[in-house]
Image 1 (tube, each protein chain N blue to C red):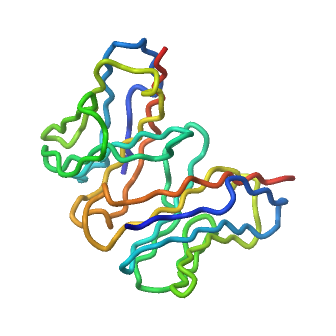
Image 2 (image 1 turned 90 degrees about the horizontal axis):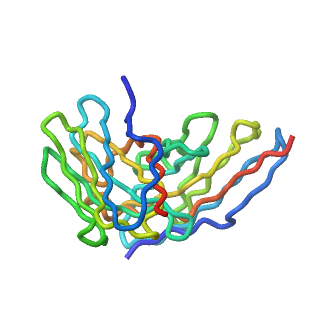
Length: 115
Length: 115
C-alpha cells in the first residue's frame, strides 16, 4: 500500500498571503488529521476530517481551515499568513473507526516558511 | 487532564550500547500509549503501541517498551543501538475514548548514536 503523501514538500510564502496544502491518505482510510510541528510548541493538533466532515478541532484560529473530498484526500488552508505560521505541517491518516486510539500513519510533511 | 513527560531532550549512546528513552504519563484512566520516531524532514513513524493487551510491547526495528502502571512509565528500550537509530523519538498518550484532539505528544528526545 502506498503511504500518506503530502504536497508540496516545501513552501515559501510572505506574510499576508494564503497557502493550501494537500494530503492523500492511505487507500481505504477515511480519517485525515492535520498537525503543526514547531520547535517551540511541539506537535499540535489542528483538526480531523472523517467522511468529508470535520470531526474534531484543535485550538487554532479561524485562519486555519480544511476540507476533505469524497476520495478522502484533504486540503488545509491558511489565510493571512503570519511569521509564526512557519512550521512543519503533518498530515496523518487512519481508518477512523476507533477515535484517538486508532493508529495514525503520518506523511512526510510540508515545510512552510513565512517571510 | 492527561500529560506526558519525556526526560532528556537529548540522549547520546555509543553504537552497540543500550538505548533507554524515558516517558512518564499522567492519566486518570488507563490510556493508550505510543512511541513514534521521526527522521529529519520526515513525518512520524509508529514504533509501537500499548493497548493494555500486554505490558511488554515489542515494536519495529528491535525496540520495545514496558508499561508500568505503578510508575506511570512507558520507557522505550533497544538492547543495541545502531547508527540508523539516530532520530527524534516522541511518546504520546491517548485516553481510551475520544478523538485525536485528546492525544498528547511529548516534547521529543533526540537520540545521537556515537560510532
